[in-house]
Length: 268
Figure 1 (cartoon, rainbow, N blue to C red):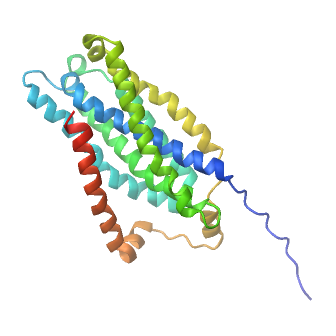
Figure 2 (figure 1 turned 135 degrees about the vertical axis):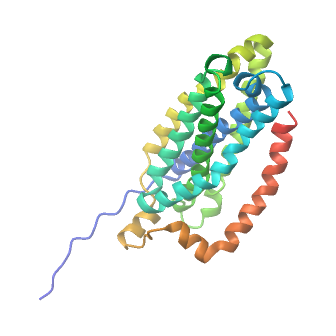
Figure 3 (figure 1 turned 90 degrees about the vertical axis):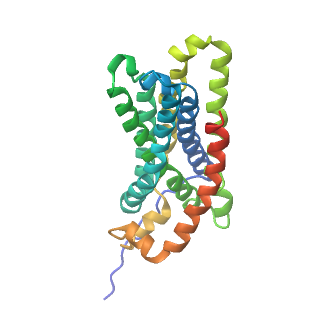
């Protein structure tokens, strides 16, 4: 006697255009948020959020807050990477985009030191930490989104789209600041104009959420769930089996970003 089973319906597949758009637009928006803070740190964050007295101390304090996100980014990648491997790529990418967008928008409405005193830099540091966590989860997740949904033989090509996002985000952030500097007086810019790029993040995040919520789960992850291949602690598995390429990749990125941020933030 034989028993037949109905074949399970095939999981929905994302179109290549939707995958490319979702992976690109998410990194573009999140890096826009990150670069907006970078530019503001070089121009206005110190005088607005730290006590007056020493311009040098204000500048150094602003760069310290900028650096906080780089401490948070590895934690964000571990946190969102863990849940991405446990509950799915789509959910964690939506969460990372929301975290970055909310943190950036709140910086845009955060009162300065003259209004709330020492709470201004404390809250600023917390929101900057949130930006770092969000970006830490974004980039790796976007790369997985692109490559795991790529058509056969096109993984490298689709892996390109998340890497285009940072360039577009950088140009958008600096272009907006340049436009505001040209259109507003110096007093207007320092008083309220610098907040506009931060507030604009709310609208951009809504666009990114709309695109990403239209996605289906990665077929690679869906197959892993069906085969019961998920591990309890993915980060332990990562460093247990692949610690050398992980550290080499991280060290290589230090060279790239050290040069980039010295050129685009510290020199400014």
